[in-house]
Image (cartoon, rainbow, N blue to C red; front, side, top):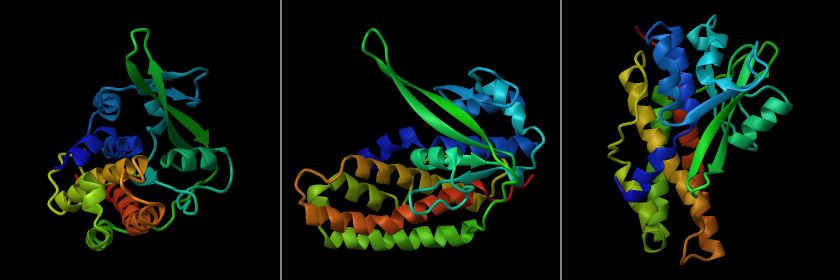
Length: 260
């Protein structure tokens, strides 16, 4: 994997892990005691506005709020401006989810992560994640692609984007992006889902997780050192369908049916 793709895997969308592990717990496939650690990893995770709480609490204290839900009632949503699919109507929850670009939805709650960056007295920078709970009324999920369709769409979009970026000679002014996309044709990601997800969903999640972060990295570093405004527009146009396909793939993988 290229350095760009490798570095990108360090900052995967946090809602994908939240949704996948809570769903696996509700399916009886992972124990509750492991849940908070699997979701948070090496980060500090807190929760605000959870039912029955009056202040920010550790993640483990808020997870029982999902104890009565069926796994299929817990859904990943990855909205962007212009495509708020999976969110309720206008309101505080929808605004927060669009700003974050991700959310977990249930029939009665929406949960959105907020990343807070801090600097210690010695100059070390670190992050904490605050999951904010929002009440919703009778939320109903929208139709989504299945894993097979999403995988085919992602493969097609990746091939088309790679062809267009090769034509634009992206390797000359953004070699790490070109190399990362080529490497993703043969993904080596170790990104995993918890027990219960079928092999297709695992493969799709692994591939889309790395690709998603490569695209975020490319966006944050745009437009590149030796590219003019027109070339940047062409690059963005080539990547836009791939970005959409990647979001669809993550949603399809994390929301796919679970199996004992």
